[in-house]
Picture 1 (spheres, helix red, strand yellow):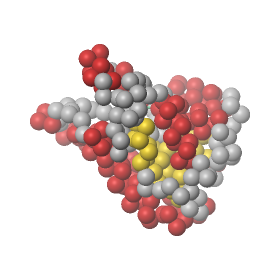
Picture 2 (cartoon, rainbow, N blue to C red):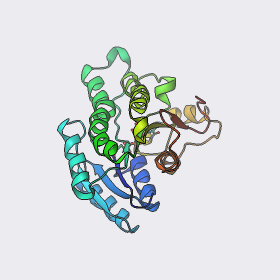
Picture 3 (cartoon, rainbow, N blue to C red):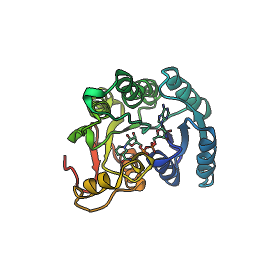
Picture 4 (cartoon, protein in one colour):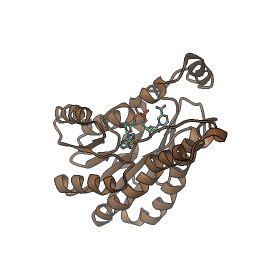
Length: 245
Ligand code: NAD
């Protein structure tokens, strides 16, 4: 992965930050994107300390124009994007009968539509280079369903169909498009669970533990590797055996 350029959305904390640091350790230069300037600067410094280049870009992906700003910034600094990891995601949980249309739209916008916008723009330089690795972070609940998450699961399942269609379109150009589906991973997103919910989830995981952000980073690195050219349109499940797709 030496000297490849990776853009990782939502890479200032949690799973995204682990992915960014892992790709940097493997020699990639990294475009860090998030919404908090301080956290962006901190992550950029951690990546540069690993001996590769980093660019921090503040981009609120709920705004459609931010996709172009992010891709332009990456192209301006590095002139290429080899690896795009669409990791940024939000939840706005609520039972279907009470779910507001705003909560549906906000989740679909950040978790699915922003991926459409970024992939569309990143494909141009990738097609030219005849190389690209696109990795979309979906979720186990996009496959199993989850009460209270109709919006989130629709977006995450949507990413899988989207990835398969684009994978078929761009395969002849040396570009792969895959998903990683984390199970329950210890991050700020799952910190919000109460003890009862945590116990209920753990009882369904054969390994008996939540996963780590590093577990997801390892799966992303596999799909991002140059040697992984014959895997496309696939979803790699990383969930301790909770769901075997
Ligand atoms: P997190 O909440 O810790 O991090 C989410 C990241 O997305 C943050 O860096 C945040 O800044 C960014 N983000 C959110 N809204 C944004 C916006 N409008 N514009 C730009 N960036 C924005 O979550 P996490 O647990 O690290 O999750 C990362 C990804 O993994 C998400 O897509 C999530 O759905 C998915 N996932 C997580 C788990 C889990 O158990 N933690 C399980 C399955 C899937």
